Length: 276
Length: 315
Image 1: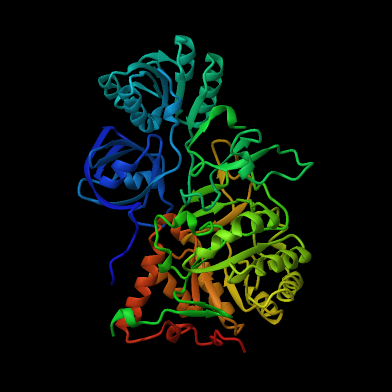
Image 2 (image 1 turned 180 degrees about the vertical axis):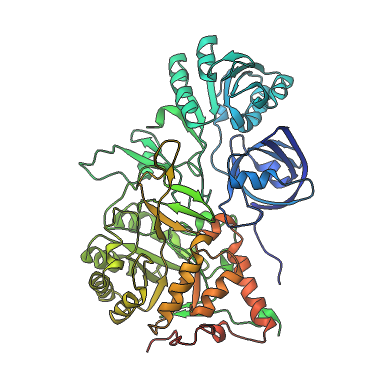
């Protein structure tokens, strides 16, 4: 059989390191030099299921340095359960980098990062870039419980200030991380957030209250990951810059938004352009 | 036999495919979306996303639910409408290094004729797929594939406005798909795509509510493969026009099931979402299968498992 001539955005690699800081949250490292070089903060990859028969899994790139990238995943269903079982030496195929990441030229000098759960993963690369550019970075990191706050010390070691929140009060602020941002009420020039949708909606509201624009990295199930299937849409305000690219409902219909693809136009969107 | 010498070409009406692998409508965009992942000279062609007479906003999210061995979707034919599509999109398809099949959806017989005529008139479009079986537009669309008279009228209307290859996509959500296939063949279809998605739904028990924004959806992926293979088997006994087999194909073995049941070529949709290398695996694996058994042409095994296979050629 002839060798497969897949193109450069397909990475056929093996797991080179694996960490499970708490049961159910796994960090897989692999050697993927081109991906490590090309990935922009906030972009994601699609990971091919090792035994087929399910759609690929979208994961934000966590670390990218030298020839290594890593992905952080939380076990929530059969697809992530299968990936969590991978061990060092196992084959792993992924494709990317995909999507549009954070607009780093719009950060200013004092960046708030707001993470919910494994939403922490795509925030490491922007933290590194912002700190390297001389900005101050403050990470607000929330999870259900203290044990699920993974790698907060990594951000602190880079030079970021870190504030924690837990749903059960086992570490940091007892409550939602978005409440914590509002409560600390620091002056930030930008807010980047990643986490579950309710948290992101709240982060958008908090940013408005603080007078900054928020960039939200949306979590969603993708099928293709490349903008082909239109399965992962979010309502976009018709006044937004991107809106004219998408079909609108006919006159008379109640829906006054358009549908943008999270995988293609996103996964990062300006909060004030979403109608959700 | 060197496997490189195997002839994998397939003929659907006037459409000659150098490889028997089309990418399913709605799953591959216009091909451009996958061009950084797959060498498009190594697929037979792409069936474009369906276009309608008027622009469509599509269904509200969520539009996808991954389920065991498959995917539920309810996109709702989001598309810019035929005017904007012809103006802004179609010219870009000229440089695709593979076949380009336009896909037409509609809500009336006149819609099918109107959109087919305008789309088929463009040189960038090699053939037309008539999508009379979309299950995700409040039942209006699928009505055509579930009613023999409407299926016949939509096919005849499209046939009347183009000489290009007309592939009519059938629905599995019928009692007797073979009887619909006969009617559509008689109305002038050059080939039949078998099958579109199987209707289904999923309920979030935590919220006690349907998961899809559209409530119901279409099931695709490995879960529907046995349903699709049987549909091809049944249709291959009923018609002489070639069949484009589709439904859960991820590997060469999967594709071979359809071909041995009577499909002249296959279409890969959701399989690309599992692994974008799937079309390459399928073509290479079919080539190896034929070489190992001493065949020189894919056409030699079409319908080989189906004793009542009627030919795969126009009568």
